[in-house]
Length: 431
Ligand SMILES: *Cc1c(COP(=O)(O)O)cnc(C)c1O
Image 1 (tube, rainbow, N blue to C red):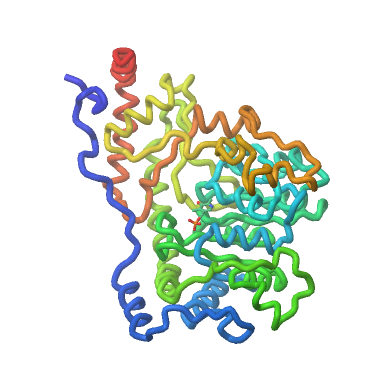
Image 2 (cartoon, helix red, strand yellow):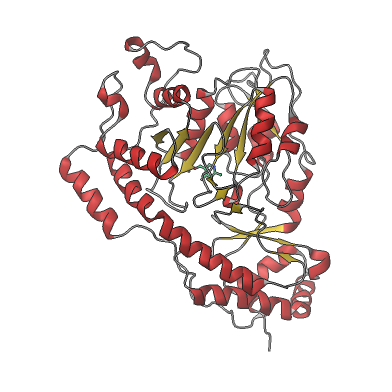
């Protein structure tokens, strides 16, 4: 009789894992109030009060400023929109390079391409999986204009040395805090750690309104430019001239009143949702302690991880099993687990083929671009090692999971470890 589910035994978890649902009665009431008001958006592409959006949008932004202690908070309809607007606000353009992380959601890098600039991938710190001042410094050139630093999985990057480096080289730093709700760095909230911070409210994030995002900054000029890009800048600037028209082509990145009303409810729930997530993480980390070759999430001193995902590293030589096989065995036991998070972003066809605008290869072959950017395999060895060999990620610690769910996840790990011989025999029989 087989023990492991992958070999035909009984899985530890034989029910679907609890989903993460954060919307309820409060959101229903708030949405109905907006519907009753009849005003589903308050935005106008005019230099009048409608430029700033409707009641819910403005209330959400005020509440976000208060929660984050930020001077400016500008809502947008996704974090992608927020990253695009932030990149435009930074004045990035043709010939510029933007240093980005290879281990992130694609738009953390695409935001440079949108402005005809060149994403330059820097490697990761092997413990946090984030860019560091060292890896950024190694990718600097005279063309570097900006850096997008992602707090991946919710773990804050080491921003103090990064901002020192940026000051010395005159770089604009954008923090992609889409995953970093609840995270703290040296007593400060993630999202507040760079010149601009971008949050996501898409339905997978710690808090959500379906689709949405927020840009925070201490800089009034940057905030103004983000607001212009959000709302048809080229029209507004007829009535309200700006000192420069650079990157002032507007989009429609405006949030609806319905989404803003939901996001307001979600922001009020954030502390509680995060506290329950953290309790699950601490429980799981405790239960997994001591399993050979398995590293639970690294948290730097004076830092709090956001745990959007719980990331583990497996050292196959110590554990005695390859990561991919280990993940398959966990999946068979009913544990949602992904090997490697996401592909290195430079694998995407746009980078491999260096084609984007029109048929002439811009921005990669733009006559103003004087560099030689690389996107070949081996470019970021730490990222590639994490992706191919070591890292696995799971959402199991979300606030919708009960302690008993976490206990069963840990039980599945222990079961696989206790039956490695059976697992390897099963794999050998598969050929
Ligand atoms: C989710 C996510 C985004 C994009 O968020 P959207 O709101 O879906 O556009 C960007 N960066 C990171 C790191 C993300 O996790």
